[in-house]
Image (cartoon, rainbow, N blue to C red; front, side, top):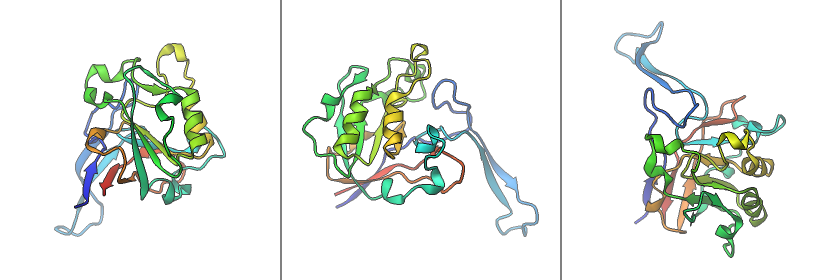
Amino acid sequence: MPKLVDVSHQITDGMTTSPGVPRPAVREGVSVPGAVPGHGDSSGRVTMVGATGTYVEMPAHRYRDGADLADLDLARVAGLPGTVVTAASSPEIGPEAFGGLDLRGRAVLVRTGWDRHWRTEAYGRFDHPRLTETAAKALVEAGAVLVGIDSVGVDDTSPAAEGARPALAVLLAAGIPVVSHLCLLDQLPDEGFTFFAAPPKVRGMAAFPVRAFALTD
């Protein structure tokens, strides 16, 4: 029987996604002016940055004329045949990790196991797994339509990197959405599943949390 597997993190009040990212504020029971008592007269409120929890990044995150969330073609983030690639323990994941794989038209999810550190100080360490620029180019050439990873992101976040994000730049320049902070990829088969990571349709936002999940065959 097909099975749904949730591969996204919860968002909770005051949680840390990664060091330096503002924490979300979640408030329940916010009154709605003019509502009829007893008929949904309260709602919640969430204040957060787009890079919270498990989130997708769009080309507009790096390129001024790139697509944002409102421009997103659902075919880029929903109903995608998926492939899980288990990466080596080295922080730098090179193109050899994807060699010999048929990735055309697929969501490529990179499993590193780093999600085991989620909500701990270890999660934001600078030795987290990430893609090299050549690996990102290999994914573009292989025809991947989405790339996800279960760590802080696809690039080096250490001070030595000076904010350069070459792997992300390569992927977004090719119109490939990138999903960071995935989890529980060990519960998915290497192939034989369909992946979904659709964000809300917000004009002017280039990154936003998603409920990422897979439907196994």
